[in-house]
Structures are given as structure tokens and as C-alpha cells.
Image (cartoon, rainbow, N blue to C red; front, side, top):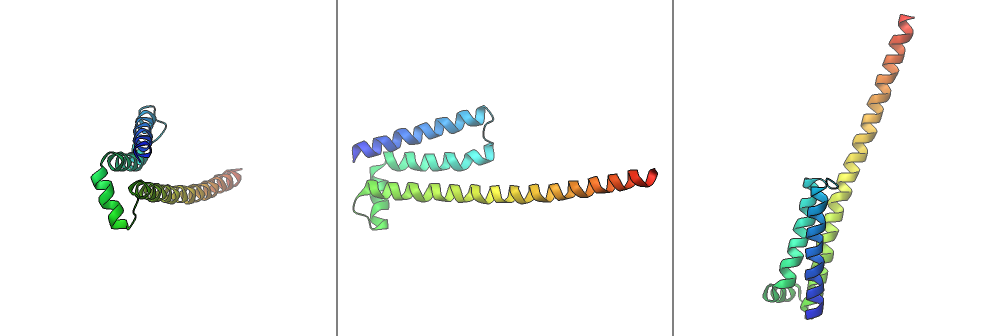
Length: 117
């Protein structure tokens, strides 16, 4: 149990450092980094707080606390991935709308240049 919790602590700390460096180098936008930082902090707190982890495990009806931690981590990252899927879908819709508006503008410019000739 200690080894798993220590590994989770190291992974969460590494995730925090990776996200902060990515924000600093402008590889990831700040508003998207908040989800990753929140998930990493929850993972860090749960992996270091045995009492809280045991309490969560009891509430979930799981006898083995590290298993509860893995389930929670899976659920948190699933929520983060869902959030980014929604963002990507919105961006794709916005790109399609922008391409359509650009095509209309190009058509209008082409039509107006033909009328002047």
C-alpha cells in the first residue's frame, strides 16, 4: 500500500511540474491547465492523507483504500477528458462556421470584382 501511495504522490507531483512548465512555455493555455492542476492536487492530497483516503474508501464501499484512490483518479481524469472533448467539439464547430463565412466573403468579393469589369 505504501509503495502505491508513494508512486501516486510522485506521479501527481510530476504532473503538477509538467503542467506548470507547459504553462510557462505557452504550450498549454492557463484556462486548460486549471483542470489538470486540480486533478493533480486531488491526487496528491488523497495519496498523502491516509485518513481522508480511508474515509473515501468507506464511503465508496471499498475495503482497500488504494483501490479507492485509483478509482477516484480514473473518474477525475475521465471528467477532465470529457471537458476537453466538449472544448474540442466547440472549436471544430467554430472552425466550420468560420470557414463558411470566409467562403461567403470570398464569393462576394469575387462577385463584386466581376461586376466592376
